[in-house]
Length: 207
Image 1: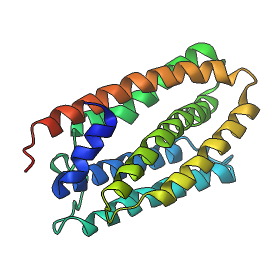
Image 2: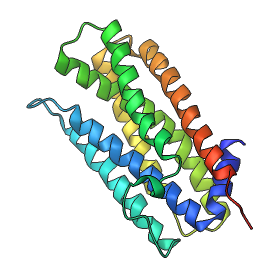
Image 3: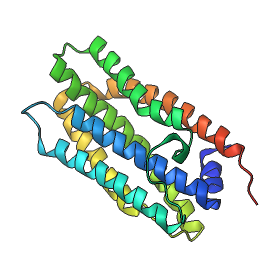
Image 4: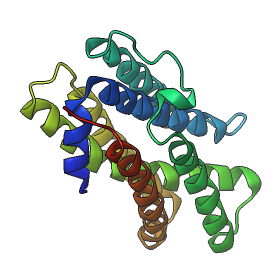
């Protein structure tokens, strides 16, 4: 099952769609929390604060959208209210760990510098993914005349990606080759996450 076909199937069922929105909300919230966790005690720039704020807002926006399609919206991020909860929880966490290990082995960084580098490269990888995921999702939402919209998130994620590129340019002139390796790590973890969702959605009965 391809990603487009998967999303089509998810959007068809309101309860599954609600869990998908909640899963995306969880991911946005987890990303915001990781951005905040990477902050230096004193040297926090405006962009980093902006990203954490906007990712938290995306989490809130996505969760709020659930009420439009499900009379019993997901109230928490408990396992029963997420799609493929184990893989969902592991995705960003594993990316963070593997990226930190890669950066530690390839840059001579202090602890605080490593945390900032991880923020740059992990956020970049996630923004690249968001730039692929949300437009496909919006296309299906539009095609099915869904009440759900993610156009505002798409615009902000595009801005985030541009901002991450600007920060990476300042971090290292050779950042692109390292980013490619981080993207490979993210790609593998993303595929594992999607495979887990496909397996779960495949077990559902659709009328």
